[in-house]
Length: 137
Image (cartoon, rainbow, N blue to C red; front, side, top):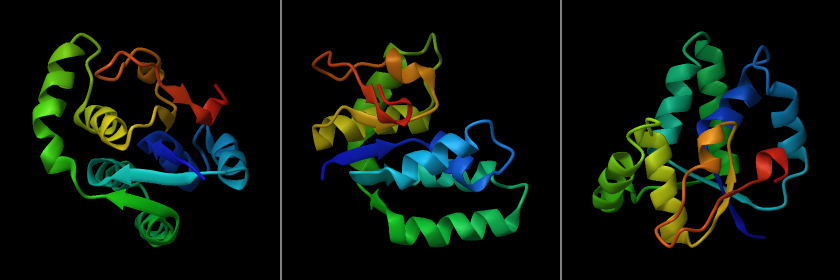
């Protein structure tokens, strides 16, 4: 199995039944054939955006402990994250997205799961495109 770097969108959708991508998130998780990897900026973003329901926040954190590999090396990526934020300032790229691009580079993967179309624009340091598995691309 290979790593799939997951953004906040599919995770939020999984725990928010009213999210437009909720059904897709369930289908994606059921068909998962890789290890989901994310980082603390994404976990923070998910919990913040699930603030409508303290129970959803707790459920997500419980699930995340079991289902996600949480990379804790974001601090070593700060120089690269600054570069990415500068490069994509016109989007604008946010910290969580930039941290995931840097994480992908460090893990040497281009496999992501995101509802964010910006991952069709982002490129790795060596100009590789990302393959968004959430939409089967």
